Amino acid sequence: MAYTAQELNTRVELQRFTTTTNDFGEEIKAWTTYGQAFAKVEPLVGREYVASGAEAGEVNLKVTMRWRADTTRLDRVIVRGDAFEIIDAQDIKYRRRELLLYCKRIE
Image (cartoon, rainbow, N blue to C red):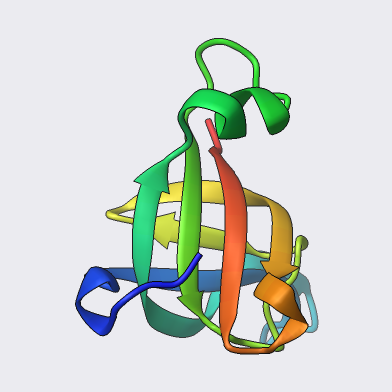
């Protein structure tokens, strides 16, 4: 699962669903960007694709980035303008050095 710095060549946005209040006291619910990172983005293939339990026609990605403690399955990732739901977030080898996100496209 190791990577080199030059493999982290795709900028991704990390978003969280938040609720804010406007000037009239109404609640506004929207996705808000809370961070950006450079990541290694790869499609799931072979055994990884089958192990992820993906259905035919889903676009699935594996996003590897430097460790962030604030990213969870409740968030989403924007890759090249497309939104992806985070299916699973894993701390590789529990070393808090890299974060692996398994994602599927949001239609």
